Structures are given as structure tokens and as C-alpha cells.
Image 1 (cartoon, one colour):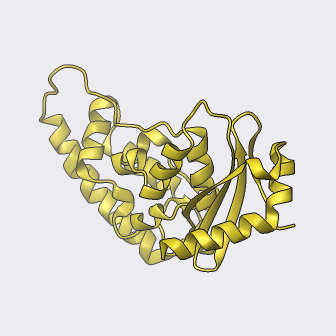
Image 2 (cartoon, one colour; image 1 turned 90 degrees about the horizontal axis):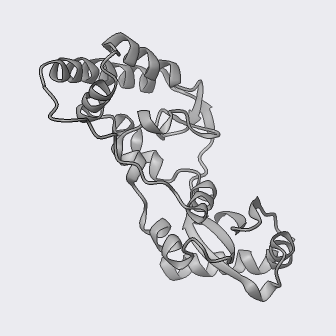
Length: 218
């Protein structure tokens, strides 16, 4: 499967190599290929049952977390939630992918566990249960990616980073780690980032000194 995916990616890059090279201001031979997964489900109205299930989880979990936080004395300052700051090439990879890993959030309520809310209440002791619940409900998009996280919209996650789960703020798939290791910050490489899922593909041209651009076949 990995070999087939790479073959597809290299074929797509070959077809668009002139366009990629021209966009990034390099010769075709200077363009390298990076591969990530691809999520291309349609964006539809958020189903009522998915919305109701998330809100039920939210209300129960926030109430439990609020009660726990009120009766727990934090020792010293509370650390902010862990956060991985993506590098430019990682941002390009995630943009091309469109949230393949985020689909797992549908069955896991956006990974918003009790510990996430407990930390939120410790960091923001002025917040009450109703305010937190109202914030998350207001962040639910009218349109979301089919069969994906309830917060996964056409333009990405509708939650600010400091209100997302620790999983969402730190997780990197193996392909993204591989992409980051292959093209570390500080190296001005011209990269065709190809997102592949079966015969579905998307390609972005990336160069740190130029930017990231969508590419169509020549």
C-alpha cells in the first residue's frame, strides 16, 4: 500500500512538475515530494443526532469537571495545556490532508475528556459551567465534514487552540512526522506535498521562502 501510494504521488507530481517548479521559482529537478493522507469527505449540515450526542457529553463532562476543579487545590500555578506549534511544512501537510486524523473525533466527542475541562477551570477560575458549555455549543458549525469531528468545518477546526483537547494540540500522524523530519525548518526546499487517499489526491507546492500554494495539473 505504501509503495502504491508513493507511485500515485510521484505520478501526480510528474504531471504537474512544470507548474510546481514555476510556482516555487525553482527548476523541476529541485522539487522534492512529500506524502500525507487525504480526507475529502463532503461538508454537510451537522446531523441533529451528532449535535445532540456531543452536547449531552459536554454537559455531563463539564459538570463533573467543574465539581472536581472546585474541590481540588492546585499545587502551584497550573500549566497551560500542551501545544505543538506546527512548522511551515507541517502546516502545508495538514492543509493538504484536510484533517484525516480529525475524523476520529466524531466518535470521541472531539477528545474533550474531563481532564481537559478541569484544566480549563483551573486556568480560568472566573468561568462557570454555563459559560463553558455555551462557548462550545456556539462553536459548533452549521456545516461540518461528514462522519468527522463535530468541529471540523470546511475551513478547519472551529475551536481556538487553547480550547481544544490535548490530543488535538499535540498529535502528529506518522506521515506528518516523516514529512517534518525529511524537510526540517531552516532548509529552503521546494516540496510538492501530495495528499493521497486511493485515487483521490490533492497537491500543494511549498517553499519556506515563497509560501504554500494549491496546484492543479498541467
